[in-house]
Image (cartoon, rainbow, N blue to C red; front, side, top):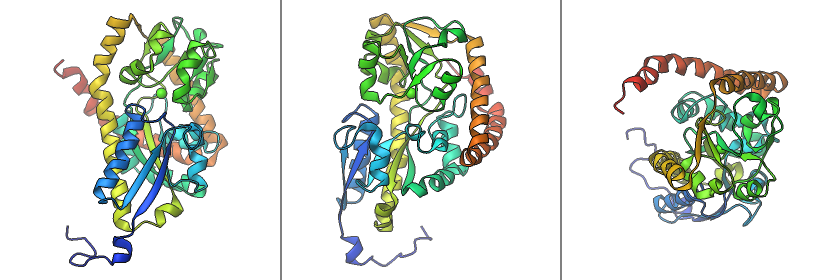
Length: 347
Ligand code: CA
């Protein structure tokens, strides 16, 4: 309260009354449940908080630019904002993948701690800056499911040759395990799976996977989602557009991203179990846990993938060092907090 710089004064009408009309492109189909909805809500919250001074029109993937064209559209300034996930841009910025999810890495709570209070958001800003982008965490899926398969996965050998939709570092791990990871935007996965273009897919978790209808095209639903234990979704803003805003509108956007981050994970966490039961009881989905040997093998490969990435790219090395240091710190604390508590919680 006491630190408000201009307390008692009103800002001049030139900035205070100027209104802005922005566009947000997204990697999600229009009004896609939770993810696109979250982007729609973010725009609505900004409108409400700014008393209509900043109006954002949200476009689904393909409406203005293709789903995976979001990065370029915002970077070039064609539009002011984009919503997606940073691992979609691995081909342009390999290090960006760390800010979405790391296989066997952080859950949502630790991701937020690393980003907001552990210095990772600052690193992310540095890495996006040359692309004229400013990133914000703006959503989280929580621990995902392992994915949809038409055959059982009993050993690492069962992954060999498997064409599976899997983005990000998880895809790199799958490739090193002999699989064939394919990056497909959300709106195209079902058709690809149904037509056999891909053999398997991962997506998010029961709440969203039920809506996607994957149970109609695959028999086995595996857990846990080792590849995405707490994926952060992002809002990216063109830096020139950002700089054109007065500080209060910047603060409003930032607040709306925190709210989107909280809203999305709350939706997923609250609704996953009921939808998992529907998948099992109404759609005869066969639930399977990855054998420990498969998870142990994938974890070893994951560490190799991270080490290799760090050895080839200095930016990735910098982020990986931050990740490792924070992982050690949070793991030591979790040994005293989350881990023992999980064993005594009322079930
Ligand atoms: Ca996923």
